[in-house]
Image (tube, rainbow, N blue to C red; front, side, top):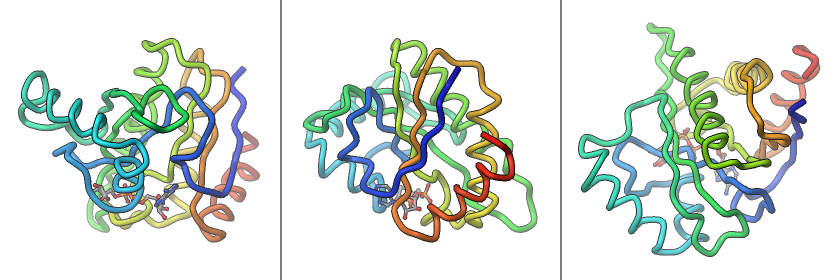
Length: 173
Ligand code: AR6
């Protein structure tokens, strides 16, 4: 059974096997969680991202997929970089957002990880409405078969934490 936890705080400080990054397809850094992870983890992460772009991911990481690197100086062992979709009013991209969580768990299983921390992927710069982002995140994790024992959503502020608390209540996670 996978345990789902909610916590408020900074994802870079989590004592878990894997920290998930809400990256962009270029994989070379950005703002939000992405910036925080590269700052906290140090240059080793960017070095591995550049190697991925020079090798298997020459066109970047497609939306909804996930790839692992070292976590550098963070307490975690690995970072899984995933790319959530940009929110669009006229197009339902929720399958891609669910895929970002599912693919991250698949890569975590490949690594043999037991614990993972997710941010609220797509709920920042990418503009996803918080309640919906929270529901998709919680539902997908609950429905994805995985050997990961602990999934911790690390939420940056009161508002996004409240959205996840409501999603957990609604879905009974
Ligand atoms: N720990 C936990 N959550 C955080 C942290 C942190 N240190 N910093 C921000 N958040 P965002 P996205 C929250 O914008 O919407 C980047 O430039 C934030 O408050 O980081 O998927 C990438 O390079 C929000 O609730 O990710 C991409 O270009 C959540 O994390 C783009 O942003 C996600 O916000 C991805 O946008």
